[in-house]
Amino acid sequence: MRWNERMQQHYEEDIRSGGPTYILAIESSCDETAAAVIRDGRVIVSSVVASQMTSHARFGGVVPEVASRAHVEQISVVIDEALVKANRSLEEIQAIAVTSCPGLIGALFVGVTAAKTLAQVAGLPLIGVHHLAGHLYAAALSDGVEPPFLALIVSGGHTELLHVSVEGKIGRLGKTRDDAAGEAFDKIARALDLGYPGGPLIERLANQGDPHYVTFPQAKLGDDSLDFSFSGLKSAVLLHLDRAKRAEQTVRKADIAASFQHAVISVLMAKAKTALQQTGLQTLVVAGGVAANAALREEAKQLCDELHVRLAVPDVWLCTDNAAMIGAAAYVRYKQRKFADLTLTGQAECSIEQW
Amino acid sequence: MALLAIDTATSTLALAVGDDDGHVLAAWSSRIPKMHATYVNPLIDEMLATVGFDLRDIKGIIVGMGPGSYTGIRIGVTVAKVLAIARGIAVVGQSSLASAAYALRLQYGLVAVLWDARRHSAYTVAYRVQYGAFVEVLSEEKRDIASFMGLLAHEVQTGEAVYLLGDVAGVAAQEYASAFSCNPVIVYDATASVYAENLLSLGYLELHKKMRSLEVSDHGKEAHVLVPRYLQLAEAEARWLEKRRGSSSNESD
Image: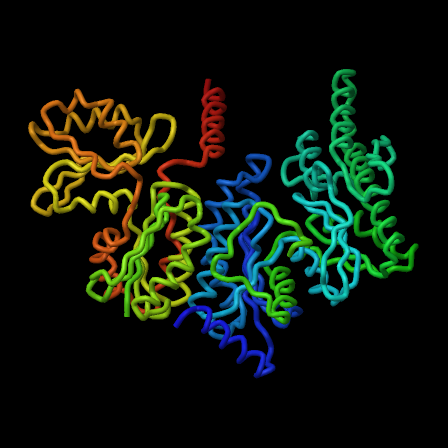
């Protein structure tokens, strides 16, 4: 029987039975190969992440071809493990979800092809998920937060301010015009000879430093723009390091790390504050890999207390890439019957508003 | 019950479905470069429906492991791995290059495959084919086109036919014509292509053996360790190794 017919039959049956919905989700957009089983978009039944971080560390960043090679080696393993840990067979799953964009194209192909094959063999609906929507719904997994809310997504690839409406429609209020915040962390960590990935290394060092040692400039983008820019800040830090080196001063790494981190967080908070005031939204979600940063979480809490707004952040382990968040985001689509067909493919770039 | 053969290593997307005995029931190929990720699943759906099957009927898979396009190979290998673990069925990986050469298994002479690997190099292999016997004379390797043609000229016997296949076969035939002045040289296929019916014939025996010998519970599990045959390191990896080798030799100095 054709996939399309089997898939629709399964969907009708599931809706009629009114039983719980288990989604098997896959994520392979960057350097983590991940699979998870999620119940009703809220309960993590299992979540498996095979990280390639140690492999990429020697290159100082993610190398796309190396990532894709690792994905194809890990993909069937993580899927198998996610099902075993969930104690479910593929026949006891109601839908397959996968990150289809944005990300490294070769890496996405592996996850998307795996998801299509699973959907096809089991006759299940297929749901393509925008990676950033996944990060948004990570907060729903940890905290149960429901739209509407303002979301600040900060990771190695993205820095965005999003407005999520009651119906789950996503509008973009601001984005980075150059580097993502996490990317800036990586670059500064490299300049300070700390290693990779930069986020946790800078955070650890910054804990021992003085955030007011240097006042690094924060980009002014004119008018009331909610966009971000981190390349000027990055240059300022590099310039500072260069000057210190030429003057043969000892580089106060901890103080510089703390000052840099402070500058990044200040600008993130300033824009989030403006966006909250402009939109009147009562909830702020902070998500993405950089949301694991304790100083950012603390500052966000202070901002929300000050504005009497509710703050929702994912548990730290759900901030970095994982498949559980993809399953959570997919559940909304499942309810709305918004399915992909077997021609679903990976895309390097795509707008969250179009999702 | 049916067997599935898939190859996505080249710009040809090649699919075949065979019966228990490895006889072809349907074989599809389409040459739409860089669209394999989009079309491999819907075309499998379509092809199987044509012969009255769906993926649940597949009991064994033969997949082309490359060499070829890195991104391309991974698509077919991913389908095979995931299908194998989802259904607990046997999977066999076969060389895509060998499958291309296998199209000429009933000819008589030398069969050489040259697929562009950039920078004057190619993924190469050569077989001597006689009365249906298929004997490897130059193993599968990435080589300079010049050195491969030299090796081939050394290998060829007087008057022996030379069949060339691949997207750089035409250029190589022209450029090295003088080395083969006593041989008929036939450019059999001037594209880098695998046809899945050949993949099915080449891999059938091994798959059949595996399907019979493995404990049913072990079927599928082996799929986890299937790794594409890239024949070269990722560029960043090669540079990293070189740098490390460089620095360690400095240390020993």
